[in-house]
Image 1 (spheres, rainbow, N blue to C red):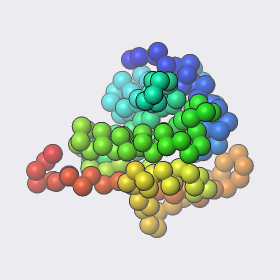
Image 2 (cartoon, rainbow, N blue to C red):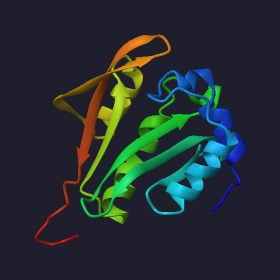
Image 3 (cartoon, one colour):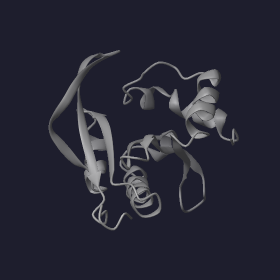
Image 4 (tube, rainbow, N blue to C red):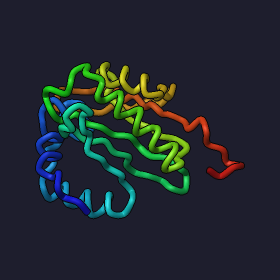
Length: 168
């Protein structure tokens, strides 16, 4: 397990602009992150990457597939852009989502990637749509966050190349 980016991940994930868009809004501690790495990443239940911008290679956030179900060939998508200068319509989230969808479908051979997003997070929803995610109709839940109740939208991307017959 590589703990090289632990301090950055904790800094990014606990940033108020990042936390407000997460369903789990409690502070992530070093102990929490180490447990995540040992129990989720090391076991293959999570695949996590650091996002770097192309021009200068600066690290700006993290993207991951979690709760990977290899038998059902599906996983939940997650992302956070941690650097202030990299958030806000710069396209990093959309480009990362597109690359992660491609990775999940072409390299991991997953059938479906799904995500949950707070329905007021319009920027993220637009980004996910550009990356190929569509809203799952009639599937939603309500969560009570620090600033009150919110609806949670579910979205998914289905691998267009997946075939049960070909077992790819």
